[in-house]
Image (cartoon, rainbow, N blue to C red; front, side, top):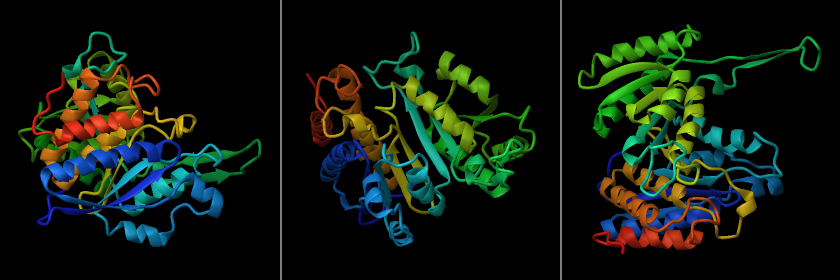
Length: 365
């Protein structure tokens, strides 16, 4: 979960990516620079142009040499990956998954928090009802790519996709979740989300490890929920959750549901963490190519990803100030989070958050 270094000088790799990615990352950098000036630390940004445009020009996704360079940074700040002229999966596997797996970013951390003034599709739910975090295992499970075809292209074709779950991988994810629940210090309740009644091998391992590790954390209340029940309760009673820990595939699914109940992809941010190495932070929404260059896209998810990055680096006071500034903007300024309907341009939203971040006290009229 990161720790503040003595010099408070951080080297950040920036991958703006495709579509509106560069626009929202520019606003995130603006806010991060305001925070660094206000709280007395230094950020050095190094930009990389990997994404769809570079792939179309060179056929290159992410060279191994650059991957080695990325290991020397304190963190990675990513905009969005996805280009309409590149076949699905090419950029995702060649850039996103390559970074996650090669840098062993074994935790995907997804806060699900409803900010003031943000619309949620859940009737009668308020910000105090939607405030939990999903800890998703990020390097194993069905996403390892283990499997293959037999008699491909014939009427007898067989496709096998295997879920790989190791004791090592499961335990380090679960231990992170317990530590995070303790540090978060909200309800101090950790829920294991799985499917023990059907996935009787993989989630038998998850459940056994979860129960064993729980004995070391007597201050943490634990419970279990099937993934289908988790989805229902996230809609009906999101206030029940504090921290949820789950595997790669289930985590991928429930975090998108979480994004919707917190107001949509325009506000959702996440981190791909290696607590002992280099972590990457990004807005959850895609590249939104139809809005490219129009200065109408919502930058708050990218700004929130930057806030998560500072928290991870140990600059928790600055991170808290950015979150307060975002909440001030959503609660008192924006008409909507939707692109073109905010009442402000992309750059104006970034300007407001940066301005409030730099102030000693936020006091909006």
